[in-house]
Length: 224
Image 1: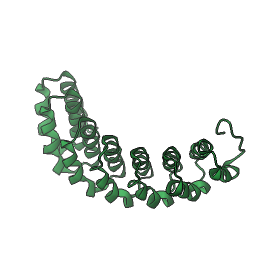
Image 2: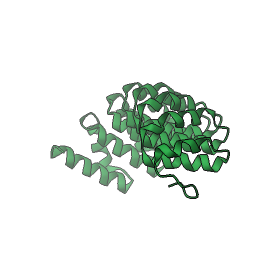
Image 3: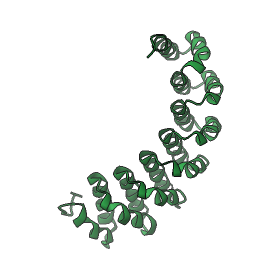
């Protein structure tokens, strides 16, 4: 139930998406996301496209991700060009949750978004979708701001493409400890192709990197 508005189910809530009060529309969108009923997919797609209030479009994009209906993918792809960076962020995150490969090209484009947090979510979503087309753009993203680098490294670990091993290994020499730690974990996800770099990391100056390298090698040696 969306706070101050009483609804008994998703179907009865749909009409309230047309309410004149924007806060009601936003609250109903959030409610529909929690209900996860695909009946709301098309109305939420319309809301995402047509509503004039950024906060409502943001809520609609987020709700579509919670519902997880692939019928929303095209609308979410279009939303990545929204004038609001918050809406673009929400759309990128939701596309990662849905995991449809149709979103890959637009998410790759979002790695060049002017707002860092949109690039963050795009990198994370590409790792979730797991499409090899994202490998080269994610390697390029390793030169971005720190949070984007961290998300790109994690995504590359999930993709497990051997071409990312050396770029990730170079991050072990980064001055930022969190970047180093994300890099060793991503190399661990790569497994055998990265074993040489993981072994070298046993002597790394960062204690957490050394410990992670030891744990990874033990797991690999045990067949884990």
